[in-house]
Length: 137
View 1 (spheres, helix red, strand yellow):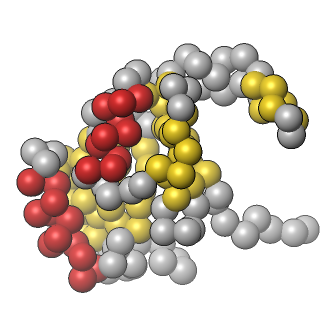
View 2: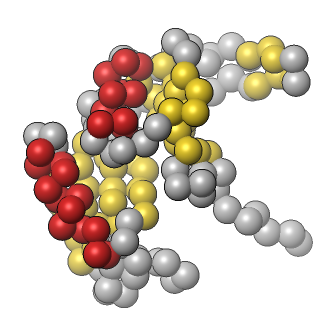
View 3: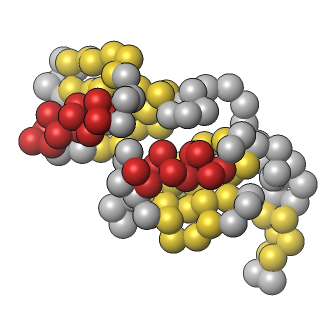
């Protein structure tokens, strides 16, 4: 059976698109490749897309000239992890502190990886993880 080659999109939902977009631009350093009132799309190191959707705005199918996008939505604190270089771990600690983002937890994994956990403005649990977390990473 063919296997997937990667995860292309990760989706988080927000109640305030302007606030969420500003957080991911200023704190995480991502630049949007598309943005409107319903969604913002960020390219993450040319290795996948982070999509922010306005909560409740995708409950109906979206008709495009290319086809129909089925409805979806999410509630509650979701989780997403971003990969980072181990050499950048301290820089990320400093960046989060400079933006008054509290680190909720630090985990040192048995394979040698380290994870910083913190929250975005919508209370999503974000993780910055160094290599050594999973087999193959």
